[in-house]
Image 1: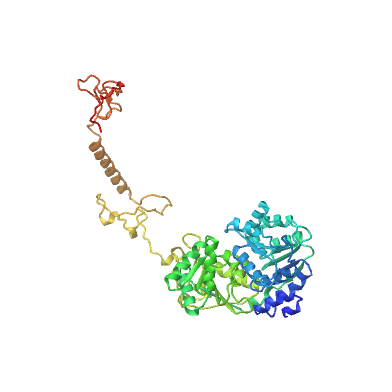
Image 2: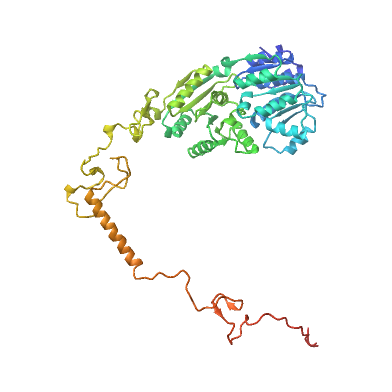
Length: 539
């Protein structure tokens, strides 16, 4: 369907035409007419399906250009998504008159935001925490709000913004129009829909989204210590112009970026520890093509809108299906083709990926690398029980396994003598070897496992011999250091007088009765002032 068939105003159609937007996506086709009618809508759709324009276009058409109050509040989970939505709306606002849009988010100077809010914008786009801050300062007043949008609602709930969202919803009038957009539909979303929406119409695009249809997904199985080499081989073989690598932690994002830079790949890290100005500069460099690879954490996955991303690589398997969906949604956006790759290093990760494949109803194919051909295929991954520790250790055929997973026959044999409980494989000597005269012998100070106790494996004669030697050593040490020496008393008696105020404390000498003059012989006496005679030769 074309935008001209949706009943949009001529100004909005002119703006869409200038950006070469002619046909709608599925979510836009089903959502825009309902929002124009003023109905509450709950939309479940994958990322990259054009959800921003799906609610932005009808909101702009319903916004009064002469209004001086806030009419629309759009809540986003991250700063990146907040700026992305603001930029999309400003593209259309440029063709309209007197409609102002202001973003409010953390990490930016609040004074500048207050000055922008004084210009009385009709549309506010912000994150929950900063919106609550402005509501406390009374710089944002939503008592007359007409429309409220929850964009990426599932991610906001996962990030712990449920209480803030409920406070904001309770502060708005009950006659408002509430629009909820989410990639997934968990129980918390159902509760918000039930409590804060008026007879909402549910639109579920789901797996029929074009972004998943045009996305080719792969996974590769490698050893845990070979994940970096596998990532480097993928990048060298595929040679993408722009790629995004996702990790589960901020520290790992920095490590991967440094590793790729050392191997001639221009890359930068993007995570929550960077300031907002730094994050914006990193994204701008990627959009301009100056940075080839962006290594990001899950927080950045929700707000990244970069065109022509050819590959999304999951260096770490996502912790849940929501993060998996939003990661791969960074490519194949709005009908374009894209690829995703997930690096697997254990049975548990492979099982999680298969669960995500089933939940998203997608097809994820295995790909072989030179590293995987050496290590073995996925069918050779197995879990083996340890015969020594009683635990479990993961191994793969063709790869060296842990010590605890070896069979009993593969271990080094131990020869034990029942009479002496000696072990000849670790240097213990026996009486048959002629070493019973107290000569120096090599012995192991580790645990003796014969009785399960911590004891040295000596024979009876060796124990007696060792005890005599130790007693002699202790006696000689005592004679050398303490015998024929009187113990000094703790406090010695001396003829020295105690310190006084006239004594020299440094040399412990008393000058009180000495004929020699000293500064301490008598107390200080103030001398009377004597005026000097006047001389005419003074200068």
